[in-house]
Length: 315
Image 1 (cartoon, one colour):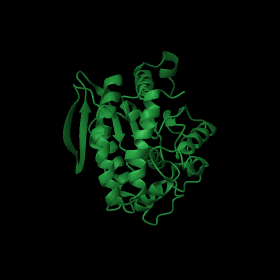
Image 2 (cartoon, rainbow, N blue to C red; image 1 turned 120 degrees about the vertical axis):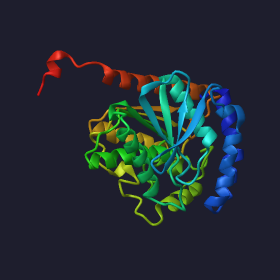
Image 3 (tube, rainbow, N blue to C red; image 1 turned 30 degrees about the horizontal axis):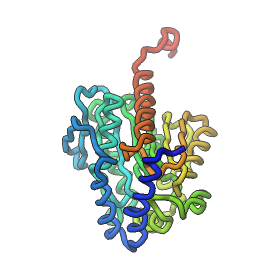
């Protein structure tokens, strides 16, 4: 059962986000509404000892998001959500700082170009460039965790599929919050949850999707990873709320990854809204971030352990 804080927050989201977004008929008006997310106060508060370091990975704008005493042997590479059209720096920097706090790893936030000014594949190419920059600067793939929320989750999956297609090394694991992985929006929840989702109405999602696709086919696996070959991907953890229009994206993704022989940990949180882990004041968000932290630490430490002698000598 959802906490009383979450029930109250859902009502707040419905009023200050969903209702306002639903009245917008273009992305530029939506951006003004989304800017209000950075003013949600304590719901997105970041750790007081977080620090942010802007830098460029080649020509790509990025930020290091760090906590004191971060390890230098691993990175959480984060792709923010926002329907491919928006960014909320305080919101996403805060959640990446929480993941850094839980794992002891540095966070790298990629400031990818936004639609409609920069439609597909601009965002994906930028995210891939950020990953390849880490590899080129001495960070092993096995020490990188890819993470993202909503559209950022889409970019994580599409980048993994492109890396696999190009036979490039894959990161150690992936962490996904409410990933949008079917831009054709064929999931039953797209309709079953259309009146109860506290964050997004279906027309809002379609407007953002169309701005990103710019007439590109929504069933292309590189924009809708659900339609691709999901075998051979790194272990992933998915957190999603039960009240989301995008609920079935996560459910079907987990089913397909398992069917392809992959490792996936899916948690569906009763009564929770879209990308709820970014709202740290909610008890459920704190629990989800703790679970993600343990998942990440397990994957990094498992890779750091030496192989048993018999296996190490194979080949």
